[in-house]
Length: 153
Image 1 (cartoon, helix red, strand yellow):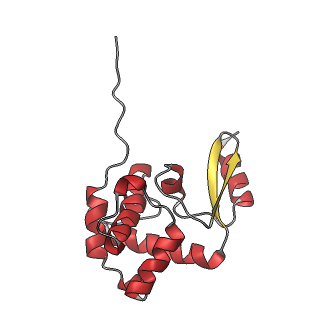
Image 2 (cartoon, rainbow, N blue to C red; image 1 turned 45 degrees about the vertical axis):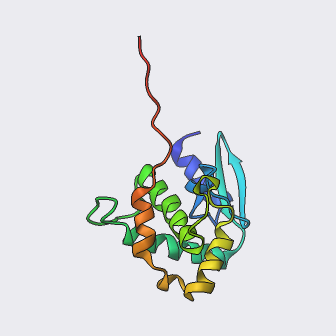
Image 3 (cartoon, rainbow, N blue to C red; image 1 turned 135 degrees about the horizontal axis):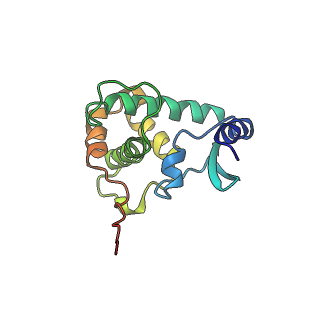
């Protein structure tokens, strides 16, 4: 399937794309409102609740803007490169989880993004009030999977 055809088909069958799709596809994060689907040989994730998707979009956009220095960027024009996007998404969610429960075992990943955001809003009243300086520290420390070591002969 040509890449442009793939993207067009993807958008048509997934109008409510999960903004944390990359983190969910790493299997380190899960969400009770997400739904997986397959298209060709790839896996996609959609959100099942419009209001929740909008809230997640706001959170992710704020995480990106607050982490700009940490990501060694001067500005963000659109999507981040894949590895930096994973770092912002997963590191940001782990940072938020750490605020709610400092003793949380990060190796468990995020069990429910929707529930996590709800818990944080109960504490901080809105996503605008989250202590992003603390969350961004976790983004800076987050490391994705280890790079594969190439063995050659």
